Length: 310
Image (cartoon, rainbow, N blue to C red):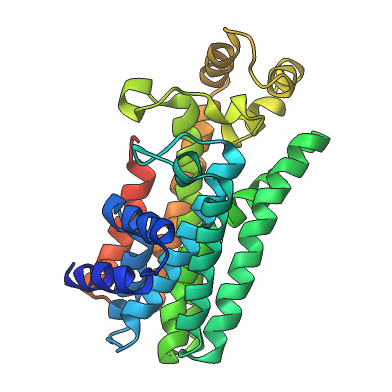
């Protein structure tokens, strides 16, 4: 997509700093790249609305800055050694540099928003708050052992879905699109985001570790209850699974035992069915927009995210 080339250039400009360590972290962000799915959502949503806009690159950069700042903080919280195959910033530069560089990105985000319609400032502010709430709720649920379906949905909405929703619907705010189109993109982004995170959670436990590129069961080892495990907690082996969760899968056979039970009780298949249901809801939401190559690309993005194997 041609706009993504412009995006990379604008991202580098916005991340420029006179301080070498901040500049290096920004350079690493640009070089690491990744799928850029959130900026791509911005551009595709605009094209699905039938418009281009002079501030579209700044909006795409704003979404990526919020995402990247949250990742810098997440890596520190999770004590992660690598991110996209590279050493994490806090491992390389220390806690203070990593956290302040994340705050630097948020500051640059505010500058970008200051030149955009006022509704976008509220949108990004509320999204940032939800991201923080989702992360803290995850710790709270583990501390209290309060594993419920609603808590799980609230966690993954905060961790993933609300930012994808912002990427999808912020373009409607930027161009003043009709309410029906704003709501369509909002629902698409949320359902797509929920399905995306559910697939992540499924792969963490059900995937082939060689394909995944990392050991399986990382969520269990951190005391996180994802959808397949939640289904098991509600089943006949719930007490056994809860014990494994509470000891953070510390015994050598714990992860394999949960995988065995998940296959036996069809928890993996139930999770796949829910992912497919959410993906279909995302696609159906887009019917409020006129048919176009961009709308089709959004549909394909949702399907591809639900079918990925790593």
